[in-house]
Image (cartoon, rainbow, N blue to C red):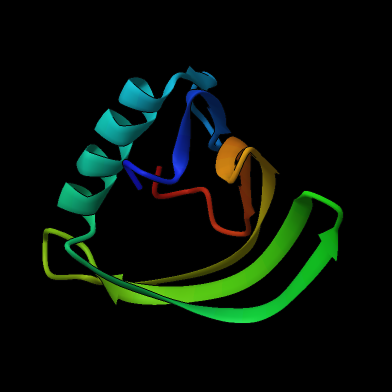
Amino acid sequence: MVHLLSDSAEYYFPKIQPLQGKDRILKFFKFLWRQYPELTFEIQRVILQGQTAAVHWKNRGINRKGEPYENEGVTLLEIKDNKFVYISDFFKDTGLF
């Protein structure tokens, strides 16, 4: 992700304040991966319009307590100069966050 994010990227994730800037976004992802050390995504479909994409995905894995986890959602992405400048996640089960 380090090379994919613009320095001024914005990230919107359910139930948290918007994250501004690559460093804050990377810090959040490190936290997230510690909570879900095993997590895989399966892309269902991608819709493209210019430099914007909507990616429908399903994921499953194991959380740090060893419990199974699965979810489904959509991530909106905007690219400028070959880097992500905008990311916004929408998913069905926000109860665990």
